Image (cartoon, rainbow, N blue to C red; front, side):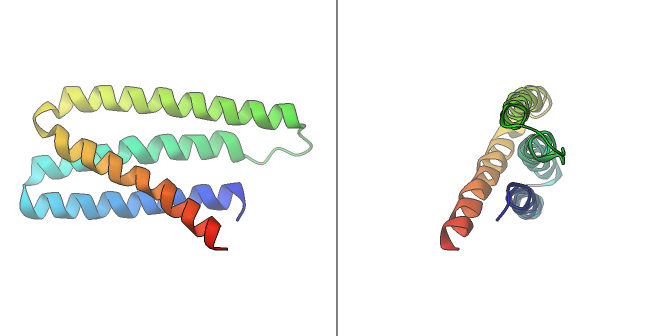
Length: 121
């Protein structure tokens, strides 16, 4: 599995986890919790997508230093974007922080799922 293929798999898994969390929160806790869960999922998905975009963009004839630099830039941007999204999440959803955090943590499991999938092959 290539890096970009793994990144697509992680993003897709995170989107599915987010959708399930939103549906569960909407069914059992109401609209405000469902919106907080959606924000938590986006707090995971958007930085993952950003990292994949920065790290795996097609760049012909790049050397190892450029590839490593792109990976570092992608990771730094991912961490910064996650921090900003969490900050806004706390400001917007302080009373519904548990669904936000729970969905974010569940989305992090997508990395483990992708790792397990690579390990199986």
